[in-house]
Image 1 (cartoon, rainbow, N blue to C red):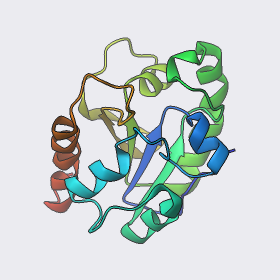
Image 2 (cartoon, rainbow, N blue to C red):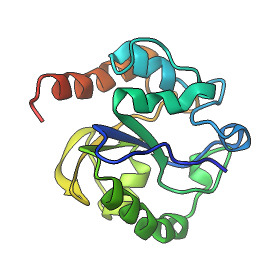
Image 3 (spheres, rainbow, N blue to C red):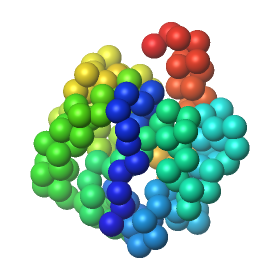
Length: 169
């Protein structure tokens, strides 16, 4: 099982769709060998060095947290059913309400689409809040997400980082 890495009043909580099998087995977020999350976080400016998945709790040192929309581990996120998202929504809302991050960042569109019941989601900042937190939707860093190069991922994450640093949000 993969545990949340959260604390009250974080700047950002990054929300993966669900744990990969390797992450769940090892108990560390984004530990799949092809997942680019930690590299992207560093290159986009969120961390001064690249955190290794085995040190994932260090992300708290920088004001960020990690969670998943659905707890069940799968090899691919598309193995999740609509019912699993529906059944996870109340627990997720409770978590976000309790910890009150300034922003919740959904990694990929699937979880936010399921939770918001919207059919069309744009990338980036969303106009509505989620349980009092601002919302961003950024591309998933999974190695299975071939639609985004490392450079494109870094660019989209850097946009969020820059907005936070410049106090525009």
